[in-house]
Length: 367
Image (tube, rainbow, N blue to C red; front, side, top):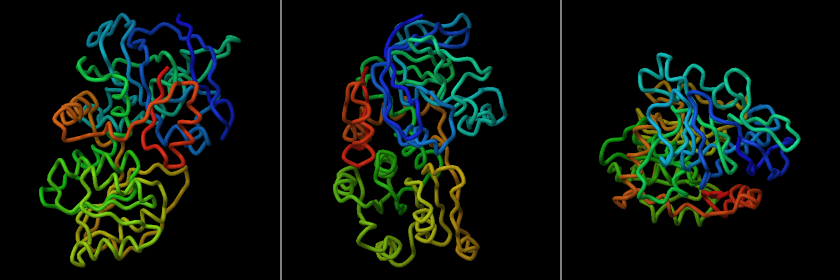
């Protein structure tokens, strides 16, 4: 048992409460991780507002990084003292997991959004002894410790700044992986990325690293578009002052982009991303919308060989992809550190506010 602090969502759409809590010991296939930094992700806010109905009260946080302090008796690939990034939960046994597609695990929703272990138990209690949701994305890492499974704790090299590596577990790898693993544009390809938050800008960096020569970033904030240029975008479009579809066609000699990526979760933006495609072309959807949100697409737009596909967690195998992104960063080809700003855990609500307002792209809270 460990006593520490955690940020708890107690009521829908309410500020998180930083409380004294007790963390249980890891079970046979689990590890106890001392958290040094956890990224704030849009999905945390969706759950806070109950766009995904994860049971409350809950300790959220799903981009944790830290040091292993204890391991369960069946853990074989991790040891005390290892530096790890915490990724998403998956079973490791279903056909999709075995095929190298853990983001499409048949138990993905329950292992990430049930808010409890698969048997319904919890690993965190408040100071009254009441259980708190503790398995959000198999980690619940907005705290001084987290209990994760061996499968979703990714060992990384020790000579990189651990406190900034957490976002590689979700948001950063989602954007980069959507390009590198899912869409796989060829060198010289054109791509338009809708939404220049941390996910979209990670996609911009990945598109530049893979050799796309027309990289168009679309957003409503000029400051984000300026950063997109710095990170590799060849063109930018402010969707609030210009018709994004029309501008993308102008920038691609009327053809449209060969690839588009929707990172906002807004239905009308998905429609734009599809309409901005060339014939044929592929639109990747990674923006998280509330349950039940629908988008209306012209069937004839799709009829001419266009494809729309959903992408979960960047189609990545975290144990493989996270170390690859770290090597790209070390080589200076994936400067995701330019997105980051640090906050102490007791300022987590300020970090969330700054993220929602667009003032900060990727807040990281440090216990």
